[in-house]
Image (cartoon, rainbow, N blue to C red; front, top):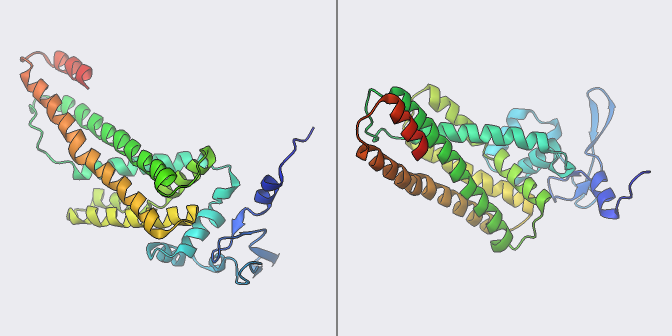
Length: 270
């Protein structure tokens, strides 16, 4: 027996795409008469072409994304990735993996060499470094996600459910595409100021994506994203370094012992 669907669910299933001008749902973006011969559809609400980016090359879309044009974000999030479809589990997992991996690269780049470890324990240094990066990524992004969700819920006064939260977080993950430039920094040497520039672009891109998804004022979305990035920076630069210094203090207080004992104690402390 076929399950019953509500009127809102049927309407959402039909209007999965959106007009990039007014944001209203639309049944179809174009009509294809033959391969390479299409006609773009107009929005019934604003009477303009619903999505002119369909006929544009990817580089043009990318340039408009870098310029933070909301129409380009509407096209990317709703007409290309189709966040309204609901079946975004695979995309969410892949985006999360790439995001955390790039964030680990960022933390590795900004980590300094002020940890005074014994040079004889190269294996322990590698284990400690990997553990520290993993802790930075997990704790920093937990704080970041918490501030985004709480700020959207209370500061912007937007009712949230599981689907809505996933949609917002997926938009945040995808709009952090500027982190891809970190791959180049892992290969070639760049000044540290480039990291600051990338962080600024990621913050502003997150604010635009949040505005497109929630349809809330730009100032409020920018405030939420700024607070989330500031909380993440505070966690990375102060809280985790404080914890690291405490662990190193206890490490130096330990009497000399074998490498195996060093490894066992490090595992317990970590």
